[in-house]
Image 1 (cartoon, rainbow, N blue to C red):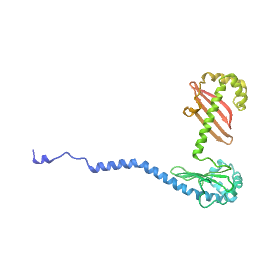
Image 2 (spheres, rainbow, N blue to C red):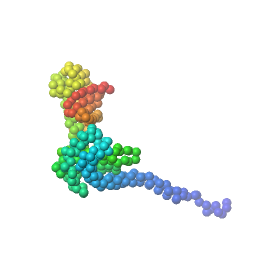
Image 3 (cartoon, rainbow, N blue to C red):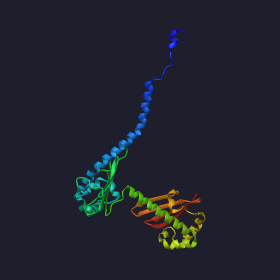
Image 4 (cartoon, rainbow, N blue to C red):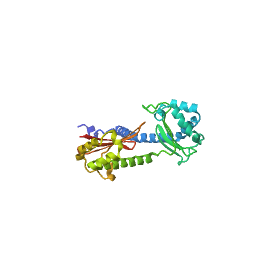
Length: 280
């Protein structure tokens, strides 16, 4: 054995390779954090810029000519106002209240803004107590915003609820719909109750022109209906709830899956107008 063999050692892993791998792993892990921080910072920047944008829009609304140009330059406004004249009519009604907005954004009780990385939604109170709601967005990545980016501009005598308030309102509405659903199921459980439902809900005549048609429907689905959960547990139920808003008003479809099929109830502007049963 050569003397040099005693000094030979097993090759050690490269410290450089281990260090490089660790850096790559840490870099990958840091990407979501950096992205969140970037989006948060971008949202704060947009929030700071929101009031100057609102101020400029309010100034443009002070003449019919400039308000008309704003309408034509933002096609999304046609969802709320079918014509330029309809838009101008609304603007003229509320114009005096937003003629002299301050250069600096108002206090929180008169101004509310929720901003994201590429836009904001804000409400501001005018001098007469009415409110204007603005929704403005800008292009981002593959999303192209139409026109100048003004997606919504509406006026109202009262303030539109903020995010938490809208969530609470949606929850309360869903709970109310669930209670009505349970009450109607209770009426369908008997012939007398079904007759009472026919008298109480004239909107059902859209789907059931004659009382006998509703009685026949109820007799068919009655064996499949079982006890519903208590109202306090409605959120744990597998509900199928759809809300659609259009030119004809609001339509709500609420269905609950029973063992043999799903019973769906339809309300149009608060009136019960339909009952459907889809077998499994």
